[in-house]
Image 1 (cartoon, rainbow, N blue to C red):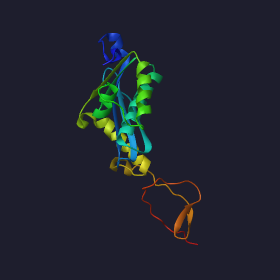
Image 2 (cartoon, rainbow, N blue to C red):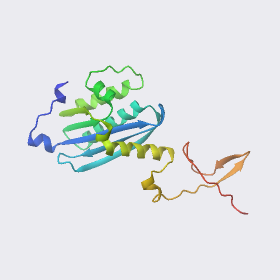
Image 3 (tube, one colour):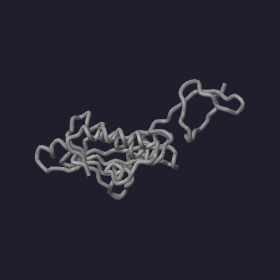
Image 4 (tube, rainbow, N blue to C red):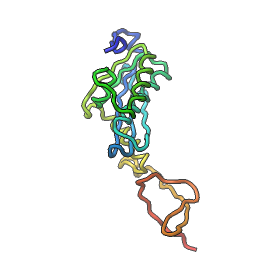
Length: 193
């Protein structure tokens, strides 16, 4: 552990610290991937919810993307301390220096995370089981749903349907404007002339 990972418990440090529950996922490995970050203040009050679809990536890439988003939020909002809670044992042990980062895809993300960590006054990262990371898991799944055009059961009734105009040529639909991500199910209704 580095000295930055030690967490002195003072009133001032508690007020300037946040806890970020981070999760990343990939449907397939690699596959459609996204991350979720649920951030609380020192009193357990929700401060922010971050989620983003990151494209066709590995689960570990998505996990690191969530960590980077949490670090970026803490730095941009002026928090001096960040506690990260993650269900990715690999990422936690890599950040702590217990495991080496051998993946060429993860190496730049790891190095950027370490640069951002160095800018904080205090930093701590710990591993938890997935059940203890429910909010972040939900946000990561919502990001993957958005990226693949799926809707979760909770948002399906609230989501408006999107109408795109196009034409068929050679059995292929060509859109006049807009596009849909891969994996989206559509209903085609021919216009009547």
